[in-house]
Amino acid sequence: MQEIQKIAEDMEKARYDLQFKYIVGILEAKIKIINEQLSEKSGREVIRTVLSRMKEPESIHAKLERKGYDRDFATAQEKLNDLMGVRIICLFLDDVYKVANMLKKQSDIKVIKMKDYIERSKKNGYMSLHLIVEVPIGISEQPEVKRVEIQIRTVAMDFWSVLDYQLIYKKDVSGAEEVSKELKGYSEEIAALDRKMLKLRNKIEKM
Image (tube, rainbow, N blue to C red; front, side, top):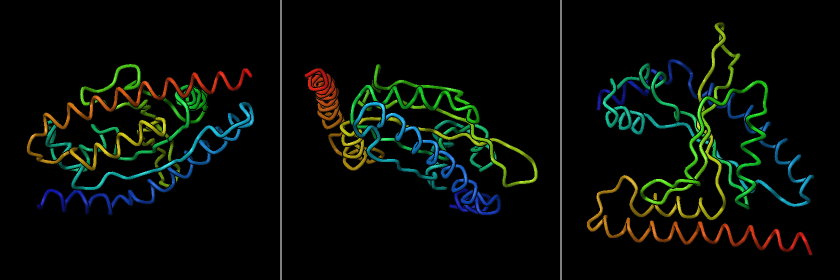
């Protein structure tokens, strides 16, 4: 489609991939330090994995269309918060909030929004803590900031999310309503398991 091709060309012209690498490098360095500090304090591993991704032109176009916005890259940069994304996967439920609190304390990044889909999951059962942050970028003549969506979740939540994406997300599946209902039930089981594992860890730490 011509509009998708134009988005791709504008992204290349803006050297968005370089901006993405620059910002992800900054965030990954900060997350590494946060992990070291929290792990040293708790005497155990806190962050299991850190992943990053830049939204593809096809996904950008689809989201703009879904939200009723003009389908171009300039509008995407203005209206969408998740063109750049970082996912932090923790071992335990309380670690998610500890990492989020540490990120909020960083003086050179600004948290502009937080959505807690753990306390209140999405209708389909999706759980994660989302932070929208602004990160200053210094590789262009004019100083600017870029927004990044940081998702923080447990291993169990990530397991569910990956399977949900593979099985049904954005797919025209026959009987999708029944499958979605079953997946939501598994999400509730995972939430219960996370709480049980946290309780068990606390019990072991007190022994």
